[in-house]
Amino acid sequence: MKKQINDFLSTKYSEFFIREEDINSNIPTFLIKPEGICPVIQGLKDEKTLSFTFLNDLTAIDWLGKKTPRFQVCYLLKSIANNHFRVLIKTPVEDGDPVPSIVNIFKGANWPEREIYDLFGISFTGHPRMDRLIMPDNFLGHPLRKDFPLEGYGQDYLISDLLEMHTEDMEGA
Image (tube, rainbow, N blue to C red):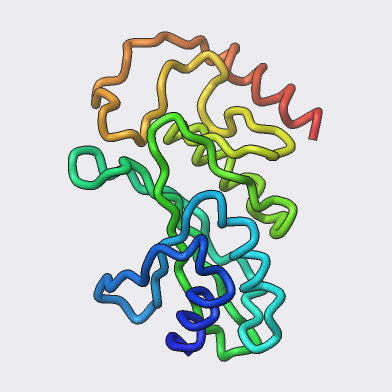
């Protein structure tokens, strides 16, 4: 299956295909240019022989000081039709650059994309509601970035303010 995915990506999406990564895992991992994320994810989902119809996970990695570009957004897809086979698609992201949203392909990407924005500061173009999900709206910074101070920025919040913000969010849902 790994060779089949590699052949599919390197031929059909050669303009977006960077390389296959060997990360000592039983999950094949491929690096794709950010502008190719939507067509590649859609292709992996729609190709009948692959059928990656389930978004298993969506997260980000901060490689501060170890890799350039600094961030990677990671999409773990699963093919239930192919014995639950999984593939990891990564895209490199420069600090401050947005990534195309895949919410139109997988509705379940909505909150993970917001979480990545909230905690890493990576925004997603075309997302229906790109705002904070976990941290208060007036929180400074993004706490999962490796340059975020361990002690934070010394912000003070009143519990009543936090409860009010989250109550309003729940009522609008």
